[in-house]
Structures are given as structure tokens and as C-alpha cells.
Image (cartoon, rainbow, N blue to C red; front, side, top):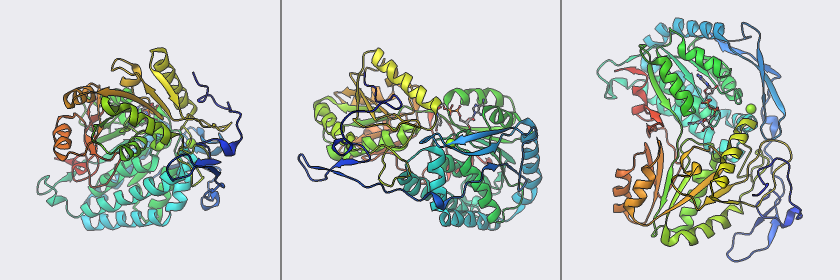
Length: 509
Ligand code: NAD
Ligand code: MG
């Protein structure tokens, strides 16, 4: 086995001669090309001012936790402590839900056009502060600045703009003549897209007239706390949005609070099941967005170079910590060798390292726990007999890192073909006929996403119709748009976020 995933292990060659490092990269023209060094291109850290400590955001004010507890959030790329954050307990949940309840009558009674003004204002402030928020998110999460700057932040703003547009058109959304909000929404989000998951939850809730108590993930609380400041800047009435940083116990207390009318959760399937049990038998409305094991299906007539880019984006975007990642590659047997050779060649050009460097493709894994989970699952893959290949690259000596990894000789029974790894690990399987591709793709406890690569439009439609997945991309992958609904089947959860469908989860219909 390779030792690449082990923290701090280094290879011997000089940096300028190694592919795939921040110091070297092959040229773009075909054939063997000279390697050349890239100078570091760091985004400035000074555009964001992180305070040494933050409170909870309740009823329009930052306050300490009732029991005074705090926790630290670190930069996963360096393990540097970024800030100390108040940790909400049950008493704080009660206080925040009370504030949201008191804010609800006035907020829900506002004409839609008035609520829209606040949402448009929030969207514009996010755009104005996008560089600051992108750097902040990269520091707290470990994902590359290229992604926070070009994907997360533009999508966050787009989500608020989109739902601002719905706020005064709810009567025409197909949910009856007088659709009513539910009340107080308790929302729990994960660490993989901290601000984007907040936007997916908060924007439709506010547009429909609900008030919100949101718990960000324990490893990435900072962008939600900066969002609290955005709400203040936008003049949002107090209590409409409340932010409670904390761990799983805070989330559990929020979900169980008797005065919460709606629960929205994104995260692991195990926690999703626990929440479903808590909410069962109550009047609370529930949406769950859970794990996935997306199949990316490549037929023999697909353009190989484009497919390779789609495969790389499908599984290595955000270090593979994406619920809809294309983590199972299903490739038609006749082109498997050619495609794998291209894919490995492409993977040796990925640059892993400082997430704040504008040339970095692969950043840090979000936490030591997540790195341990990925490492253990990859070891299971080897132990069960799949063949492991790791892209040649050095890993920095501090922080949490895992090199891009492929498994071949994978069968459907292998753990790496079944379990969500939530890391930069791709399992490769082959198929011979379209029916076999569909059967293998659907052979999963999950059903969140899939991809189909072929030149034939009729085949795209025929295969997509048979795939039991909430989202099917054709000749592309991991494309997001606020107008498009997103959500799963089976153990990937239920309910849809985004688009007109995303309003339904927050309306009494
Ligand atoms: P998690 O489900 O434990 O955490 C997600 C959020 O839920 C966090 O805010 C967490 O504090 C909160 N939470 C934890 N326990 C809770 C409880 N009992 N009640 C209410 N809220 C609770 O996810 P994780 O531990 O960060 O990651 C574990 C695995 O989950 C990953 O390896 C990955 O497979 C999966 N995951 C999926 C997504 C997704 O987008 N679908 C996101 C993150 C993690
Ligand atoms: Mg952090």
C-alpha cells in the first residue's frame, strides 16, 4: 500500500520535478512536456477579520451560551486555531426558538414584496462581501479558494436572489391561493458547503414567511456567524434569523424542541434516521438531505477527454466531500483501459496544497475525524482485494490531507462500491450493456445523483429515465443552479431543495 495518505510522509524527488505538487505541473500541449514551477499565488488573508471569539446570534444580538461553554474551530489545512465560539446548549435553543416565535407574526404578515426587499439586500451584501466570505470559508473548511470564490459564493448569492424573486409570487407557485408559512424552522447543516447549505435552508424559509434557528456544523461555524452580521447589515428584524453554533447535542435539542414547526437537515444518513425517529408522531414537517453513492456512467461513444474532466470534477471537487459526488465510475468495458489511462494522466496534474493558493485544485480534508474515516474505508478497499492507485503528490506536514485515489478491480460487493466514503476516492466498475449499467447504478441504498456520458441523446433520455436518482446530469457533473430542485430517493432522504419545489417544504400545503 502507498503511504501517501499518511500525514507528513514525504517522497524524495526535488519539488520542481514532481508532477502534481504546488511547485510543478506538466505543460498543456500534447506529448511529454517539460515541467515548470508555479510561483505561489496566495489569496490575501487580510481581506477577512476573524475575531478571537464569537457568541451565539439570538434575537439580533451576539450573546454567550447560558452555561458559558465554548469550542475552538481550526483551519484544517494548518491546524491553526481560528477562533473560539460559544457552544449552544438546551437553554440557548429554548431562547432562540422563543425569539424566532416572537418574530414570526410580524415577519409572516409582511407583504411578500417587503420580505423580498430584505432577501435582495442580503443577496447584494453577500456579493459585495464575497471575497471576504470566500477567504473565511476556505480558512475554516479547507476547500480551495478557487471553489469558494467561483462556486460556493456565487451560488450563495444566486440562491438569495432566486428566492427573493419568489417572495411576492407565492400565490402563483401552484400551492393554492393563500399558501401559509409553517412557523419556526429548525435547521441543521453540515460542514462540506457551510455557507451554501445555510443559503439553501435560510433563503426559502424566509421567502415563504418562516423564521429560523440554524445550527452550523461544529468544524465550520464561522461563515454562519458572518452571515448573522450580514443579516444585521441588511436590517433584518430581530429574531427572524438565529444562529446557534454547537455540536450534535445542540442539533438534537433543536430538532426535539416542542415549539419548532419544521425541521430541515443535511448530513449523514445515520443522524438523519435519528432525527426522523425524534420527529415521528409530532406535527413537525421534515425534510432530509442525506448521503449518496452517485454513479457516473460512461458509454463507449462518449468523448473521453470531456468525460475525464467530468469524472475528476465529479469526485475530486471539494475533496470528494460532496453528498452527490460521482464516487462510483461505471465505464463500458471496451473503453475502460483507454479511459483509465487518461484519467490517471489527468490526476497526476492536480495540484494539492495550500487552499488559499489560487492554483490549488485539492485542498484539505475538513477534520481529523473525517480523514480517519476516509483512511479506514480506503484500507478496507485494499483488504477486500480492490486495487489501489494514488496520484503522486506530497502531502503537507501539518493539517489533514488525502491524495486523490482510485480503486479498480472493484465488484458491487466491495465496501468501497457501497459505502459513502465522503473523500477523494473513486471506485471504478465496468459494464457491457446499457441494461447492466442501469442495474449496477441502481444497486445502491442511496439515490441522490448520477451522470450519463454518451453522444446519443436518445440513450441519455432512456438511461436517465431508469435511474433511481434525484438528479441525473448528462455529459456534465456537479452542476448546480438555484432554479433546479435537488434531493434524493431511498436512504438519500426526502424533500427537495431549490427551485419552485423548494418552497413546498416551508409552506402549509
Ligand atoms: P453528521 O450527520 O454527524 O453532522 C451533520 C450535522 O448534524 C452537524 O451540524 C452535526 O453537529 C449535526 N448533528 C450530529 N448529530 C446530531 C443529532 N443527533 N441530532 C441533530 N443534529 C446532529 O455528519 P458528520 O459526522 O459531520 O459526517 C459523517 C458522515 O456523514 C460523512 O462521512 C459523510 O458520509 C456524511 N455527510 C454527508 C453530508 C451530506 O451533505 N449529505 C454532509 C456531511 C456529512
Ligand atoms: Mg474549521
